[in-house]
Length: 455
Image (tube, rainbow, N blue to C red; front, side, top):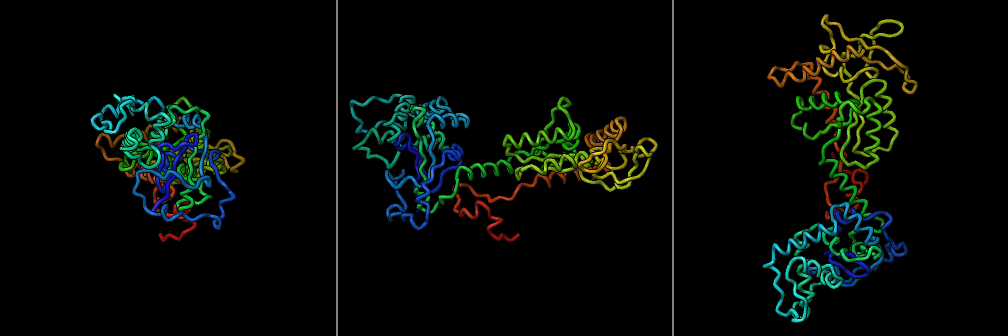
């Protein structure tokens, strides 16, 4: 059982058609503005049932030549599609060259039929065949049911070449690009999905072009590297090294944005890069890492007000137990306070030992400006202490390279950072099904809300 769909150029069918579902690669070419819907025909009670002949499994190699149309589809111009196809990597020149090279490489398989007319133009090479396929006559030969090789030898031959191309270059954008080679920019191109609606494969409310983008986004989010954004290059280096030490099995999945010392660091860097990558539609999972201090909490609060996609996570560095009672310096003198959420930067992640000086004293936190949004002071290590602690951390993270055993505290720090990244990078749940899946729309669109799936 199945229902056919096809694309028409200027009202004429072309060799871009299929059965029951439309490949995502093709739907990615269309937009909301291209969508056509005859709302007067969308009421279920007014739909016409498929005829028995259309409902039976077809033995032909192509779609039927006629059928009801106009209920649901997409329409744009050849010029608009050509521009989109080029940005997808399907330029006219490249596709024609590939086609010609393919035929030349398989010239033993394209002998002309015995019934080929004597006065017909000879097709001596791949370029000639490709040129013939891109004519209006050649496109029509590749659409619909196969012609009779005895009664229509030219049509049959060109049809066979189209079938070979479709099998070899099975991305439908290839055949679409080739079909549009000689078409005026203003010519209408229409994808009709009426039969899929009447056959129960789609509903009029569905927007398959959006579904295609969601599936692609989901696939990229789980299969592509996780992008990690940090407040500075040293944070990126230490996070990367922590993964290599504590979670080497997954370290390759994470990539860190590290532009050296040239761009401004701090929370502004994390906020601006996260906003920019989200606005640009980056589909990778993104983990924005902020310090566990007052400024970091403020930045996290700013990002939480945005409508960030599900694959974007914003985290602050973990709280550490030894920061609960930590030495501080302020206008009123020294003290001992909980600095988690107020002053915990990357230097605090690797244990107490690296924070101590030669005399065993912890590097104190100094209080600075008051953050009115958060209602707390921002604390940090003095520059000299920050540099000293950083050098000790970097040396400790490198000791494992020389074969020496890394300290327990530093190893625990690496583990806590690795776990933070792994938890933040856990992808949104999705149904692993393509556009050709037999799962219903209820399953594929919102399964965890509409269905009860046992854990």
